[in-house]
Image (cartoon, rainbow, N blue to C red; front, side):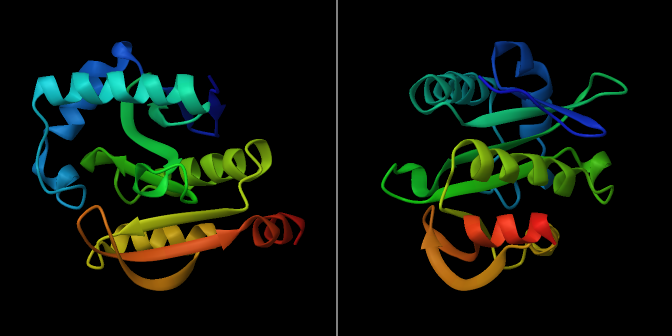
Length: 176
């Protein structure tokens, strides 16, 4: 399993060790507002950890816990997964942060590391991100990453704004 590091974060594959921090974040309505709209129970967080561990074992990628390097605190989570959780679909990138970390550039920092992993390590031909249309903060991260708006599509049971980038565009962006 792959650990990624950035200037301020260590991205660790999610496991049981991350339960307290994940549940503390995922039980907050403001965090889950754009992620299904429902807060998580402890049982749901445990089930998510088990599912994620299985995906790491099966695919070699899934969800990371974002650990603030200076404090060791879990401040967010993000993923590379198959869009719609279907291996026939392109790779999807996603993230969420604890509210006290919003607006500090941490999501963009983590997203750059995860995108590099998807394109450079997995050789993903395409990477997409989806969010509810009203989630302007995530849309800004998508823009900063260089993903381009593709339109509205139905994913995870509702219309989502879809952004995407090809591996060639990523490599051209890195070379520039």
